[in-house]
Amino acid sequence: MTDPLAVLSTSDGTITSALNGDGVDQLQASTLPQFLPRQRWFGAKDRAITSVRLHPLGELEDGVHALIAADVRLGEETQRYLLPLAVQWSSDDSEPAPPTSLPALARIKAGARSGTLVDSALHPDLARALLEGMRNNRQLQAPDGSVVFAGTDRLRQHADFPAARPLGAEQSNVSIAFGNEIILKLYRRLRPGEQPDVEVARFLTGAGQFRNAPAFLGEIMLRPDRGEATTLAAAFAFVPNQGDAWAFVTTALTQSLLGSSDDDGAWIGTILGQRTAEMHQSLAVKTSDPDFHVEALERDDVAAWVKEAVEETHDLLDRLQAGLSVLSASARIVAEEVLRARDLLVQRIEATAAMSPSGGRSRIHGDYHLGQVLITNRDVMIIDFEGEPKRSLAERRAKSSPLRDVAGMLRSFHYAAWTALDRYRHEHGTVPDAVRARVMAWQQRVAEEFLAAYQVHVAGASSYPTDADFARALTDLFVLQKAIYEVGYELANRPDWVEIPLSGIRDLLNEG
Ligand SMILES: Nc1ncnc2c1ncn2[C@@H]1O[C@H](COP(=O)(O)OP(=O)(O)O)[C@@H](O)[C@H]1O
Ligand SMILES: O=P(O)(O)O[C@H]1O[C@H](CO)[C@@H](O[C@H]2O[C@H](CO)[C@@H](O)[C@H](O)[C@H]2O)[C@H](O)[C@H]1O
Image (cartoon, rainbow, N blue to C red; front, side, top):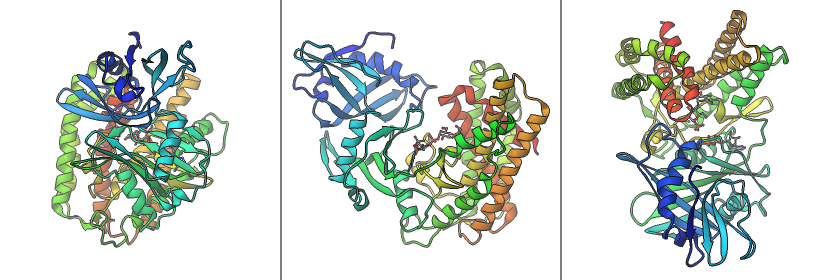
């Protein structure tokens, strides 16, 4: 933070009063517009912030922990984020506020006492208060509504909650584990409407009887007097695991390339194919619930998907063209190749529209990649049914083809292969052709084994196309659309990574 922090003062000891008084203008106009773009979870790093407004939703403990919504204006659009704030107070009036490892956003005064206002999303006491609130079905009065906590009977079976352990901040959301029992997830980007992460987990592990996803334990919602509720946080059963599949696969492949391990992680393809198919079978069970009932796939559905993918492609390529100068030299070369192939790309996407559809539309995972899979010995558990964070809730809740998830995972194998090569290059300076060939063979093998196991176990699911040619064409369409999404995602979040999806698009086009 370059500017000195704002000094707020609270007349009644609450955070809400501090946010209504002097100093808040500096916090909103200067500190937060500098702070937000540096956060991994902030989804608009590629856009200029016009203004930030903080809205207190309620205090869990007056003057100590508050739930705050930050409305971030980006030109015409406003994005809302959850920004829980805490005050770390000095122990007595003569002491300065204690040092804190949490991001400090302002100083705060209450009479002679001083404190530091911090982003408290990773504060273990906040997590505990939220979980206790779910257990007790607590309610907080919010301006024009209330914050409603709802716990399941399964949550209440926990007599006591183990110590809270934040799992790190390098994610779209905040995850805090309570021992090996419960995980609490705070959603950073807030949107009104049913949260698919909660809805899908509840259905899958309930009516769908899927055993490889964690059970849902409770949620916290902002329920306005008018309009739809917004989910602020949710709790799930903790899955003891050996890390996520992204960390596992990239480490295993890199170590095998460097000669320090015999396990290149390729075994994951088969078990992942099977569990993915079982997830899709569970999402296709017969149900009277209109949100989960499988619908037959019509020509118009495919036409709408194609139209959407073509529009996203043009939009992305226009943005890429305009932003070429900010790319690294090597990313720019690939971007220019992709830009020259615009017509071919569009033709490839449009090819599916001419085919006769089969199969159905069901709810799907929606943002399926290796980071959404936890390794449990030689098996996997699937998490995070939130969908793609950049999309609206309506888009994320829309029924689609399960092949979208298949395409997401195929893209992830490419990301993993690319990352292992990059790490090898980092270690040795260059990548010999033989190593490159090994990695390409690895990617092909994992993808083939994933698809083979998937096809065996998905057989009979009403959402899966009966015509193999159509299934292949639809997968190609979704792989391209996912890679286009990823270019946009990387530009907004991790510009150094943009060459990965760009090279994926180029390779797919070259494959013919
Ligand atoms: N049920 C769970 N059990 C154990 N760890 C979990 C569970 N859910 C999430 N995690 C951990 O939290 C991380 C982030 O979770 P995720 O739901 O993918 O959040 P995000 O939406 O921020 O990507 C995971 O990679 C995993 O390490
Ligand atoms: O996990 P999230 O729901 O936050 O998903 C978003 O972030 C992902 C990165 O963390 C991003 O995934 C992309 O990068 C992964 C490697 O880090 C790779 O395995 C995926 O295949 C690739 O799509 C995801 O797209 C985004 O929605």
